[in-house]
Length: 200
Ligand SMILES: Cc1cc2nc3c(=O)[nH]c(=O)nc-3n(C[C@H](O)[C@H](O)[C@H](O)COP(=O)(O)O)c2cc1C
Image 1 (cartoon, rainbow, N blue to C red):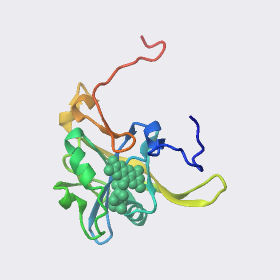
Image 2: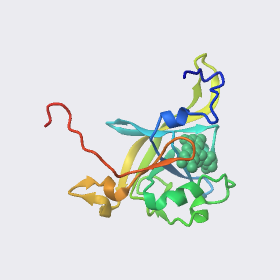
Image 3: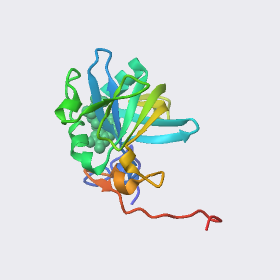
Image 4: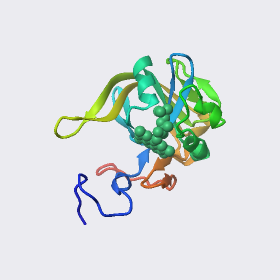
């Protein structure tokens, strides 16, 4: 089959996100100027460079995480391990801005070192980020579409020491949850090592 997204795909559900899968989940924590913590999962999320390390997340519509990250210039990305999957999902509920998703999901906050945003204490890892760009996406005609991208430079990296094996962040222990299409999630392991040509 073939379809153009501007037209109907003819399927019961939109397949786009299942095709661009799996996607890592950035569990974005921020602290509003009044001190209220905010926490929400974003699967339009990824690392986009490594020197300096940079990440992005994208909001379908301008959500609180974008507003607070832009206002404060900071956000943290918490790694979603399998043990935190249900709590992560709980924090996707559209609570009022005055309500902390940490409390609603029964999550303990930990302080970041460099930024004021909190992080998820139980997360296997977390990235402290300083905002470098906030932009509204445009379509191919240059028209703004109401979706917002936040880019940040990673200025601090937290790793739970228990997740290290022989000096590597061990994904067999951290067990990342990834977003697939529909209401599906991916779990890791299994993990397969593949050396590059000339490395074997
Ligand atoms: C696994 C998962 C991934 C999500 N990814 C996104 C995303 O990439 N972009 C988005 O706008 N909303 C996404 N959502 C929905 C937001 O988490 C939800 O709208 C949340 O209430 C936003 O919170 P905020 O307004 O505090 O930022 C996702 C939800 C789940 C459960």
